[in-house]
Length: 180
Image (cartoon, rainbow, N blue to C red; front, side, top):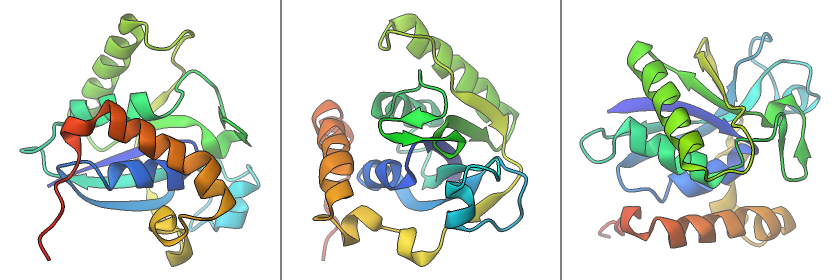
């Protein structure tokens, strides 16, 4: 197994997408990239800790490569807006890839450049690519948020359309239902 740490706006949105991706074993919402130890959700939402909302994705490289994981990441959020995803505004919502080693760093640069060259996005990609210093898991109430709250207003207005987009664009990558 390998681990990727990615920030693309609200972590509930990325978590809801990556849990459906074949090859992904686990997704944990949390915080990375800041200067405050053990930050709370409220502190991070205040925008002064330096942390981004991120997901830490544990995946099987035999089933999905890190490069392909990043391609899904770049397709599922807008990497051209600094400190913003839709109505979520602030440095905690920045687009970021926190790499775990030199190989991931090189892959992140390569895939970012590949996506930029493909012209998928109309503006320059501003995704931060930096080594992971520390990951702080969010409280339990923030884990599996979409699965536990599918009918909440935020989930219906913001997360559900992203999940639908993912399912349409990446139908061949969906996790097969697990046997009961």
